[in-house]
Image 1 (spheres, one colour):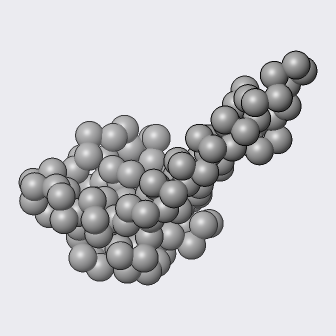
Image 2 (cartoon, one colour):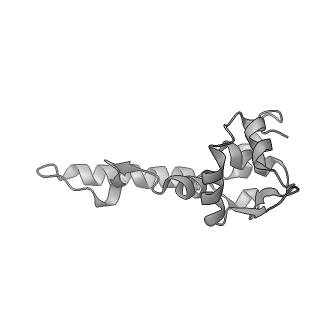
Image 3 (cartoon, helix red, strand yellow):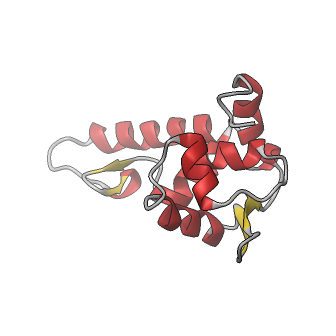
Length: 129
């Protein structure tokens, strides 16, 4: 989320990996796999080369926290590493319904918050502007 907010705050200007690492205090070696996942999910666009970098693939108002979380983590919620919808229990029939509700509420919350919403709440210095 930090990297996506920094890229969103750049307002369309390309942001390279080293700049992201410095702006957000994230190890530069940690970023490439995350950026790859975000690009593969079509949340980021990239341009290679010395003057290259990353920008949002669509507007900050059209990318949700849920989109970002799914791109880098897969499921929004899981039980023992499995999707909440697929977990079953012997003798505890109410638990799957509870976990499905947790998953549904988590998705509703995270899909209702966009990068723009978060940017509007951050002080300018926190977003790396």
